[in-house]
Each structure stands twice: as structure tokens, then as C-alpha cells.
Image (cartoon, rainbow, N blue to C red; front, side, top):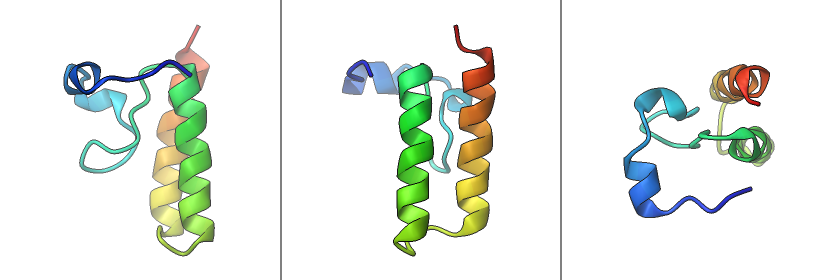
Amino acid sequence: MSRLTAADRRSLKPSQFAGPHETYPIPDRGHAIDAEARASEMHHKGLMGAAAEARIDAAANRKLRGAK
């Protein structure tokens, strides 16, 4: 996964985030995979609901299907 600098993160479009309030950036395949993993981790720890995890997974999966 490539490193995402603060400047890079600020330049992302809202559609390039999987979570609410610009959380879980998914500008590339590596970040999309990581977003799914972190959402699953937070859900299993009880820090995120199933619906939020499902929304993040769906956004990451859309990115993964369209990523090259």
C-alpha cells in the first residue's frame, strides 16, 4: 500500500472515501483492502455497527472491481 500524505488526502474527492466524515480513504487497491480489514476489526471490537461496516465494505468492493 502506498503512503498517503496529508496533502494527498486533502486532494481526494469525497467519493474516494469509504467511511463517513472522510474516513477510510480508498484512492487505490491497497487502501481499499485495508479499509475492509480495518472496518471488520472495528466491528469485531464492538466499535462499529454492522451497517457501517457493510457500507465501508460496499464502497471498497466498488473500488476493487473498478481498480486496475
